[in-house]
Image 1: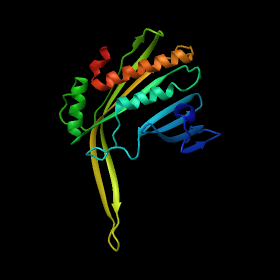
Image 2 (image 1 turned 180 degrees about the vertical axis):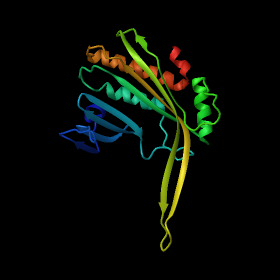
Image 3 (image 1 turned 120 degrees about the vertical axis):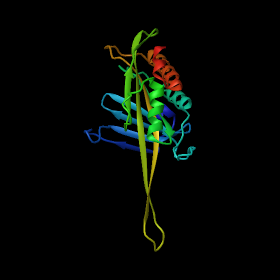
Image 4 (image 1 turned 45 degrees about the vertical axis):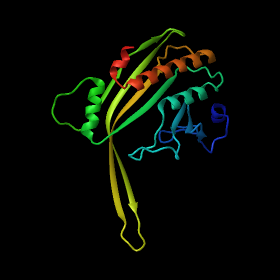
Length: 223
């Protein structure tokens, strides 16, 4: 499946004949493609294509690897179009976004501005907000979920430096930010999709995901 998606062989591959809760995958293949790290994960009745930043990618000031959202989505759509007719019953595209900030309070303020709502309870620690609004696609005629999940996040990096003859020096660095998960998926109604419908639907949900991600606000669900 990795070769079908990318046209090249994976760098690494793992197979598992008996999936279990700790290792649910039948197979996982990884390798670089179009400037990203591709991971194809196969579970019983499910296939996931995960795009992550290349290890040699550009870092921001906080040391986080950057990904151009639109390029990543377009690359995923182009790769998915290479897959043959597998008659899926459900399609989904998920974008995980992260906006670094200088503190948790700034992260919360960012989320409050995006959702247009404040708890008005004084100081608090973490904020998680989730909302879904369905939408009808015209051709092919099918309904989709448009799920947004916001959260304030603290990322902690722990490193230890060693000097010859010296004492190990541990360093902990905290990075704060606001996250947004955009999850666009079709609602299962018992039918399977043809190859033509699969490509059309996936292209439409990709466009919807990019439109919402560009806004980052709950108001984008009105469209």
